[in-house]
Length: 95
Ligand code: SF4
Ligand code: SF4
Image (cartoon, rainbow, N blue to C red; front, side, top):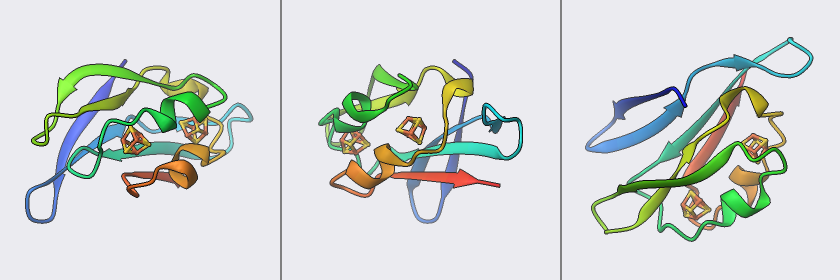
């Protein structure tokens, strides 16, 4: 796991994966998880078809365990994590 923490806006902390190329080696992909918005439901982890996301042992200011990017290079940019997150805490960037 090789993650970067950055701060965006007023107090927003986002967990960002290192850019990687998809399996075809065409476009860089980044999975951004906003710790502040996450309620730790784990839906994103369950729906990721490539097991890219996993449970971290870190908590946010709500006391929730937020997910982490565990297998950075496996992401295929399907965006299921982004689509199923009920709190809009994930954004997948391609390109
Ligand atoms: S975009 Fe798809 S493969 Fe990548 S982390 Fe999200 S669910 Fe997993
Ligand atoms: S689906 Fe959203 S709210 Fe639930 S654990 Fe994942 S990032 Fe957090």
